[in-house]
View 1 (cartoon, rainbow, N blue to C red):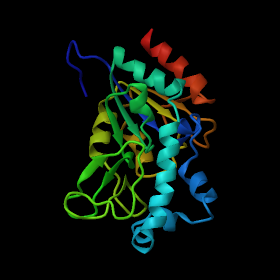
View 2: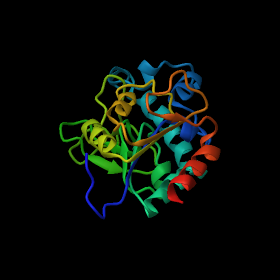
View 3: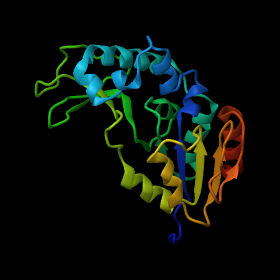
Length: 232
């Protein structure tokens, strides 16, 4: 895909739970595994919600409080700094607001956002709640129970087509904090241009996607260095 004269280079960041873990937040599987020994089917599925909405709300209220108490780390801040010289889109599997709180302005949350609640009726009315809890009996304007605005197992991820378009148009792509094992988000790298500058940062990786350079290590150490190279 060609670029018009005067356009700023385009960067896409694909971020996963490893990035938030460096701000002290457990991954979903760690949180679910430790949380009163409940399975993910009980905590993060439409079926679990229908069986025991109070349990689901309690789990996500705890996750939301921890996410709001956490602070963006140096990798989040470095990613936000890219916007001084580039057109940047962050496509994240994370449900916290750490990218936005670090200063990123164009973030696509493919798995939803803890900072929002939505109704359970056809209109899916959506409300920003930041770190506040959702309680049983708390209703949206059309009278349905509020639930976390999170994509649960068995539900469709968000922004798939938009994310693919951004990846396909990107001049540079940085994958950080993910082993690319969660689909369909992991398949986004397949849409990257052959001539794009593609970098993957993770603690470890079984198989690095074709065309990507692998920069192992903690995101808080590696990502700022990568971004300094791109900005300079």
